[in-house]
Amino acid sequence: MELIVAPLLASAGVAAPTVSTIVTAANVIGGVATAASGVFSALGALSSIGSGAAAVAAGRQQQQLYNMQATQAEMQGRQAQLKARSDELKYRQQGIAALDRTLSTAATIAARAGAGSIDPFSGSAQALTTYAFGKGFGEFNLTQESAELVRQGGLISVGGADVQSDLYKMSGQQAAIAGYARGATSVFAGLQQLSQIGGPSSSGPSSLSSYPAANVPLPPVRPAGI
Image 1 (cartoon, rainbow, N blue to C red):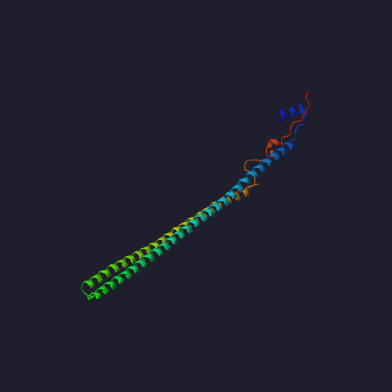
Image 2 (tube, rainbow, N blue to C red):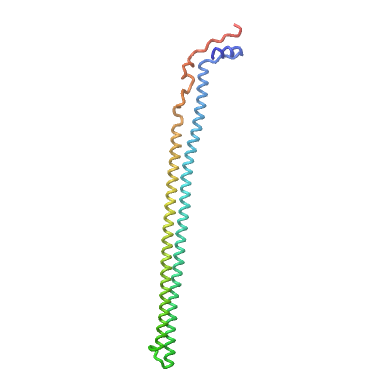
């Protein structure tokens, strides 16, 4: 190849390159290629590190969303408990009102019986009083049972809300842990890439002097026509 190139360069009036010039040019080209490869490797490493940071941030953001849902579930449970408490008090007030009406009815029966010279503790007057108390206590017991059912329902609502809140919090913790795991993996890969930048290349010799043919001297250049 050199026997063909050298005469052509001589005929064109260009001095033939020496071996050292060729080796230097090859080293320069190899250095540029290595630098470019290092730049791309650094960019890839930085991208991996950035992806790791983004994964951690995404995990924490998802955890915050789960925590917000947990707080919302707790608030709903407390609201359900307050409503249950309010309904319980209404039922108990209704029971007290039923007892008041019963006592008022019994007093009216006794007063009318006394006005008519009738014994209020015997006969029809006693029967009416017994009936009034039976109805009154029945209504009172019903309101108390309703109040207790409402109270128990409120407690169940609070318990369910607490369980739901705990599940949301656990999901948030798992999301954060997963984000940290993905982030650590990406950051470690990026740091590993950075540590390998500038190391020896495994693709082959880095300069022309590594080849035996590069050490063979070029033939002398003869002027054209001689």
